Length: 237
Image 1 (cartoon, one colour):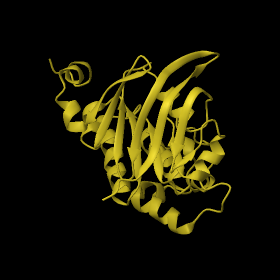
Image 2: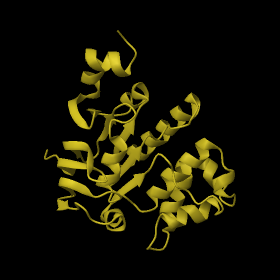
Image 3: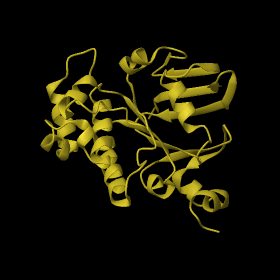
């Protein structure tokens, strides 16, 4: 069976004000996979994702999505191509209601009722709070809303930057349970995460990003058994 490569990042370098934070990054994501980028604070995960998704300009390298190069394209064009992004900061519109935030995720198209129904099936609490202002939701509910809003664009690949940031352990597990449902519906996922044990249970493969470079890769099982990963990320000596 031929494996379809949805995303390929080639020798990507990017940073801020002329100073690169990530250097010559290369990795790929196949269709249907769940892939993890693990790394400590400051490793460059957010810079990498923001650059891939058109929110930061690369210094060099290429981002190829679904066979088309999107390097340096504006974020709205990348979303329309099928790459959805959930930032760690969520960036919700706090005074707007839940359903209004979701509807904006489909912009510039009209919200698709069927997609909205799917989002509410995945996140029943959002359906219960559809008329509530986003700023009054709990942290876990806001994360649900951020993911749901990205799903409204009907992406082929969903990129999530630290989806468990600020969540209590129970809510972090609930977030990954929802991601498992989303993946079960055929969506490809790429996740940056510091809660490595939780993400390893969910992902097929992973890459270790340290000091702006990828220095290790493998299946989640291989990484879980690697002494370097066990010491640095799993708390096992």
